[in-house]
Image 1: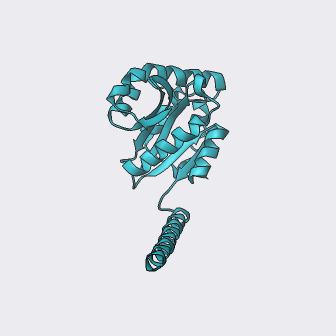
Image 2 (image 1 turned 120 degrees about the vertical axis):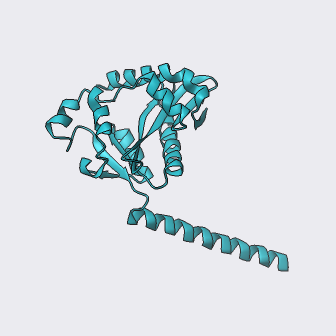
Image 3 (image 1 turned 90 degrees about the vertical axis):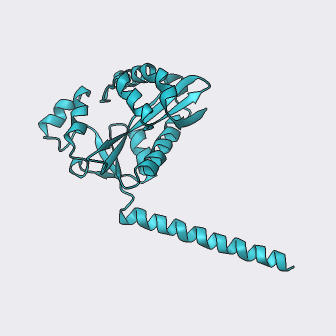
Length: 205
């Protein structure tokens, strides 16, 4: 199994990805925005997606969307083919697209809206925090994308303030995440100094 950044060579899987997304929405009975193959292909060609492959078989997928002139990005369309579920693949794909998002859009906040408890857990493990919809992008194009969701009427009735989805946000510049980054940096420096001291002691013998 390999999880890689998708490119033009993977556009042949676009129809299978869309069918899998649609099938998952039907099976769960929850809101998943439908996507057309052309949309998925565009993400691949721009390097804004990751794909999981078992040999030449499509196993999973997720893509990046940018909103509010790059102020926000979302990791969307996380899907695992039925043949490969129950193996922890979704978590690996989620981590891959998260890391890719942070590398490609280092100054953007990463957000997610989901009804899935498993996705919420994965988001939480990565450092996302639950937030109100008002803390997410105000780019209307994003919210228009919810129109294909079966719960869109709820979003409309609440004037986009809430829905059945939970909003979650990762902000690398938050005080908590800055502290974690500083702690990791200090821990690395300390480990490096210990190794250097041990190496010098060994050389002196």
